[in-house]
Image: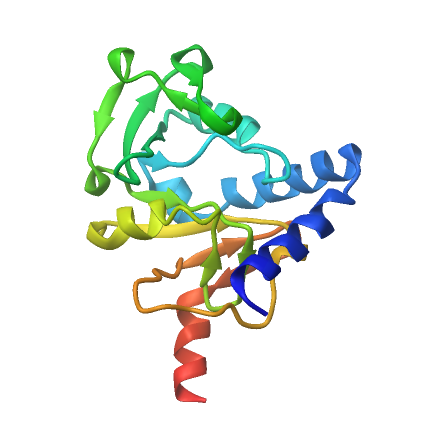
Length: 197
């Protein structure tokens, strides 16, 4: 299947999730993420403000603040399809922009360079065990992480979002770790096993 069909199929599967199930499964992911060694060691973490049906990151951000972590969220620049990350200390530092996305207000937030972040949480719609993903079609993250070499790339997702193999292109950047309500996948090890197998 092509990327558009896969994206639509997974979105339809996620749309059947009840509010209660969505909340319960998001909490299960949150608990796993807070036990993740890379998160525990990280000082600055980059992640998006989630929209349903993405795993809820609002509660996670609040927990990370309590732990004294810096949380940076992206501002997209649609004309260039690039992003900039800014540290937020309160959700009042966000504004709602196109497509109901909530983004930082640059004038009242601290800019953070990619390599100041210890881990970047990368969103997506469809994933495979090797860390390849189908995003929302803008290519923002693939472009952004090309020059990211400091830390790890992680994705938070529901089990319904995993398929056997995502069609890839040369510029696609896979993530290192995926966390679902039921498992933690070391995508780097999976890619190694696939190459050796």
